[in-house]
Each structure stands twice: as C-alpha cells, then as structure tokens.
Image 1 (cartoon, rainbow, N blue to C red):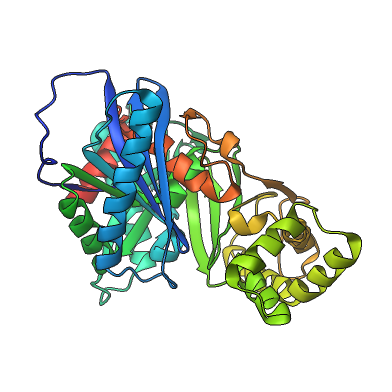
Image 2: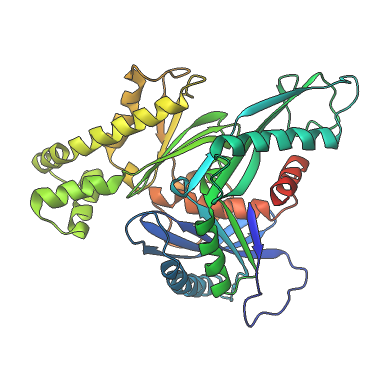
Length: 410
C-alpha cells in the first residue's frame, strides 16, 4: 500500500496507547463516493458512520471535487458515528481504496532453484524471490517510458516450496521456491489528488490501496472471478488463493440500461432508475416487465460481449476458474446473472468446469459489524471490504507482507 504521513488533524492531542484504532475509509466509485467511520478493536471491526455522494460523470478525478465533498461526507459520517456510539469518534487515519478502473494490476509466477536444498530457507532468499516477482509484475504492467504510473500496493498471492503452498517458506527445505506477487499501479495524478485531499482534511496518515485487493482477501474460495457491475463501469477481477491475479475494467455498467429507459419513455434519470429498481424487485406486472426487458436487452447483449472479450484475454494461459461472483448496484437485475451464466457456452472461453454464478452481498464480508442503516446494497460490498482490510492492516504483518512493503517503499 502507498502510505503518506501528513500533519495531524487540528485540535487533536497525541494519543496514548489504546485498544481502538479509528479510520475514515473512502471508496471512490465511478458513480458514488462512500465514506465510512470505522473502529477497529482487536479482531472486531465496527462501522459507526456512513455517508455518500453521487460523483460527476467519468472516472477522472477533479482535485477540487473530492476535497470539498470529502469534507462534507466526513462531517456527516462523524456525526452519525457520534449519535450511534454516543461518543465522538474522530479518525486521524484515511484509507482510500481505488477501483480497478483507476488501476493497472496483475500477478505472474516466478520460480528459483536453490543451490543448497538441504538447508532451511533463509529470509534473504525470500526477499530475493519476492523482489523478482514484484519486478516481473511491474514490468508486465508498464513500459519503461510510462513514468506517470506509481506502484500503489503489492501482496503475496502464492508462495510454494517444491510446488507445495506455504504461508512463509522461511525454515522449510526444498529444491525450488515459487511465488506470485500481485502489484497494483495508479497514475501519479490520482495519487497526488488523494494526498491533497488528506492534507486538506488534516489527516495524519493516508493509505492508498487497491480496492480489488481488499475485496479478494475477504473471499474464502480458492479461486474465482468477480464482476463488479457499477453504474458507469464493470470491473473484472480474477483471484487466486485470496489475492487478485488480473484486473480489467469496462466502460459500461448499469447506467447504460437506465439511459435506454430514459430514451424510450422520456423519463428523468431518477425516474428511469426507480423503474429499473422496481423491475429488479419484481414489482411490475407481467406486461410492464416484458416492455422493460425488451428495452434493456440490447444493452445486456453489449455488456455480455464486452465481458466475454475481456475474459478471453484472461483465458490465455489456463482455464478460467468456475466460480463467478456478481456484485455492484448494476448486478441486481436477474438478467445480469442469466447473461453471466451464458458465458459457459462461449466458444472463446475455457472454464475448469461448468461455472457457478452467485452474488456477493454485504453480509458476505467477514469480520465487519455495520451499525448504520446504510451499506445494505450490492454496491456497498467494496466499501465494507475496505473497512475489514484497513482493520487487518493495522495489525503486525507477517514476514512476506513485511518484506514486500519494504521493497515497495524502497
């Protein structure tokens, strides 16, 4: 993760040792910015405050917009936290999880033979292995002349000794060490924007990370694919062993379906969105449902074709994992799941076995208690996953994570 140390928030005194840590967690989606006030106490993570705003169109960040809006939602979320917890919770750490649409990310395997397989693996060997894997990922993601991309975060996805998975190879004996390191990069302008926001709000620490990393570390399955269908974009995340290995983003989401309803019946955007939600909730009669389906079907076909083309690029080296999870506000339409299941019949894709399609819900994020009345929708999963991730990252890291952080900072 990319950390920046900033001036302490005004009016705060240096804290003594305490049991709880407080964060402001920001998830700047393409259509909605969410800010959470989070308390981490041991293994317990509690969301006490939640505020959100609709974002301007497009994925480019205007430095003035997030600064002014984050000030509003920070005040709103802190006020909610005070009312719910009956005490002032004033975070001095800001955690921002950037979506796949603002990132480049991926992981590739590396292996190295050991000259003395009978000797236990030493930390210096692990460091060298991680450095090779990190360098490979970064070199695959950017060309040497692309100097405006910065390494944002890195995480070990897979560590092996003679092909057997381990959490830390130090102390093991074997002939070959293997590793996959996920690296994410963001544009320098994006990083500088959020550094400016954090300084403006007078946070003492800013942590920038990849939202897909937080999402995948909340999953228990061995591997799979996430389709995060937002309003303006669809993010595709392939994960393996609790970490992402490939990212991509499509400039099409649920708003494309809404605009078709606007054009058909000359509705406002809010009216069309309510109609789409009523359709998704099966609140329309049969005739109206048929009309809505006829209107949105062309956009569903375009979306499916774009997803298929992107998965084809992810399908170059090995079969795709059979578990697919849908999330995001645009995923609530039943036809979205039906379209995803149709990928099983694609002539361009190869799955390890027949794919199973499910939905990722806020209640599927482990280790988080949400005390607010917000954050109950399919589009709120990334924000809750970021809250859980921020709490985990506040604890001492294991050896591989610590070494990778040192390599990134170096």
